Length: 165
Image (cartoon, rainbow, N blue to C red; front, side, top):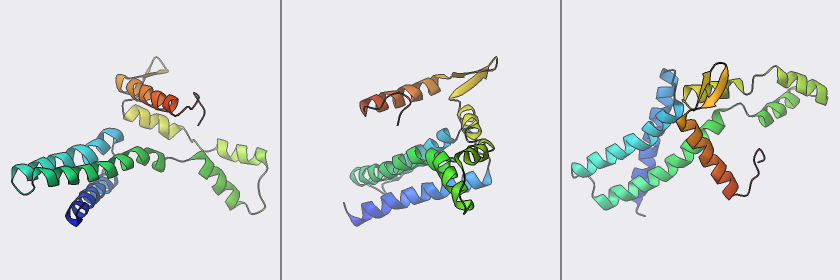
């Protein structure tokens, strides 16, 4: 890999990351997964195609830059939802840390019950159109069923039982 490919691939990723941070700070983004795919996958692909069509990049260079960018972008898009969540394990560690004398199990459970750890995730799933609420019951949309099937297949491939990490 030449330095130019490395610099262009990382530069394209940094440009997408900067765009992502600006959009999320300036606007209340709904359908985050869709916008992550647009910002990190579709727009950079269109930029590379445009640069090739304009003669600024040859197809080999554009392919190498695109592959590097897509590798970085795929990792980021997959980890972003997990990183932005209020992770229960971290919430437990923070609660114990804030109480130098420690907490009993009962005190810890009572404290955690005040935090709505899953409410934001449910809203995210609705906003991203992975689930819908009909007659007070939550059901999959087509996209949600496809995503669940993909993760279920992946977990079975790794040998993980349902509901166990």
